[in-house]
Length: 245
Ligand code: PEP
Image 1: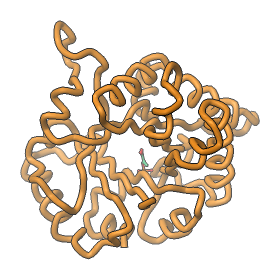
Image 2: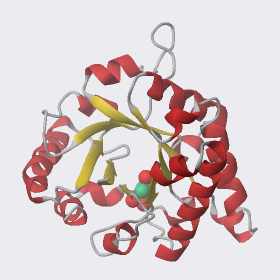
Image 3: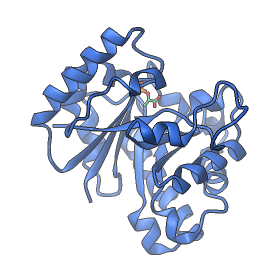
Image 4: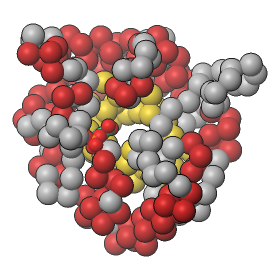
């Protein structure tokens, strides 16, 4: 299976002009990229409509709402995202959880994304205090179990899990490749209990946190890691393109 590299622009850049430049730079730069890598770009909602169709990357969204339409001020539905060509949706990013998103919301989003025949990227990860207290594994286990609740076994491998330890998100600096690998293996074990061994093997598990062009290879070369989720470094087109080479 192709490795998957996802770019998360977070709440950047601040104008359509800058976003257009980023999209154009990516379309040009990614032509040289490794064809064995699938690339997904997740800009903020307002820029989804200015992304020209590109064979170089697929479009992703940074969030969604689980209802189809109606009186839900400020929310964005999956039908709206699908209409804009979105294929992947980030669910439960720590920067959303920090402002009150709970596992139950994340699970509703994951299920709604699957229901819309799109791919959810379920983000999990512990904070530094939890790691220091020896709770890293129990925290991510709970997030994965809750995030995948009520999903039929045959659908579980369609979810992408992104392990993003909060303490490793930039500007902090990455976790060690070994730590990412250990958690990836653990996550596959958790998934094998929810689905089965094949599901645990097939499901894509990514690492995210302070990835850049100099360190990306150390992570992506592991057979157990399916790819990367890249935040800050994805705003520098040249840097991001190098990550994908
Ligand atoms: C993220 O927040 O999803 C992320 C991976 O951030 P960064 O690469 O900037 O650490």
